[in-house]
Length: 372
Image (cartoon, rainbow, N blue to C red; front, side):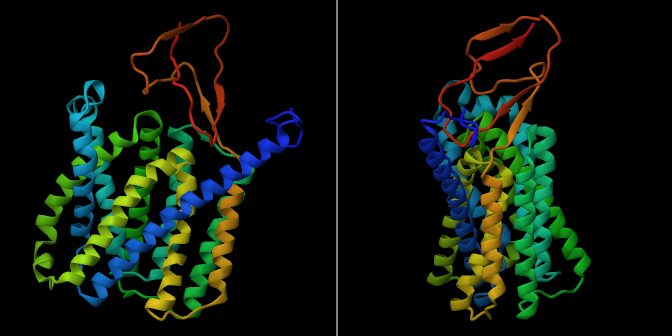
């Protein structure tokens, strides 16, 4: 084993390090693609609400859930066997129903918070999703972190603080600021629900499948958001001055949102829910850079400092793999229910095992494990 990296011999050390660097850059780049999609979502929403007075956040989410239903739920419906839509509903319908409601209300609470508090408060308090994801990953996914991961997280949050400070200096604190406590609580509630949704998503895409997650979210999301739309937003929808420009903005919003939901499970499986949420911290900065040209925002050098600080934190976090502590006495298999069962001898005291995660592709299915 080469002493510098601990994962290869001296002959292959150069090739190993090159592969690790490319994996690191790929992980960071994939996260930035998600940030750009969120930037597109924010820009189209801003045009709809401010230029055309179309305040329809529930309707916009409803369009995305309908697209997920048409693409992924119908895919599950035509599958055969245990991956069929009806078979999945028989086993786990209530779990996906709860997850769908959580996802809907997370979107709604954060959007609603802008009516009560300032943009800076939303940006800072939205970072609450990071400790939520870390704690849930630690206790439910058994993810274990190293010191460099916590250093990277702190650096990313410092970058967000730098951006919020720049907003204050240039006077970019949009938002009513009235009933600020209500707005702050809405952000914290939305961030908590986002964290729960993201950790559940990581669990599902690693142990079940991406198509199952998106299909179930599309099914229950479209159903419950449709009910919420009919109750809370039908009057606002009738006030929308429909024309081709508004239609194009709704199409752009739906395309970005659908791309975000479809691509995020891929990135989460490649990295983790924590890494994805750290990557998404740059989304506000991309929106700001676009706003410099589109909305004539004031510029501050602190924005560039914030951007590069967050990127440095992302590189630090992604430079080392997390590891997963698994106890064989409670180990469960999901991906290969019909595979062979391996009996483990009951000799001696069973100790929890530790499995290190990898940024590489999984090449084979794991067998069932039964503890004697």
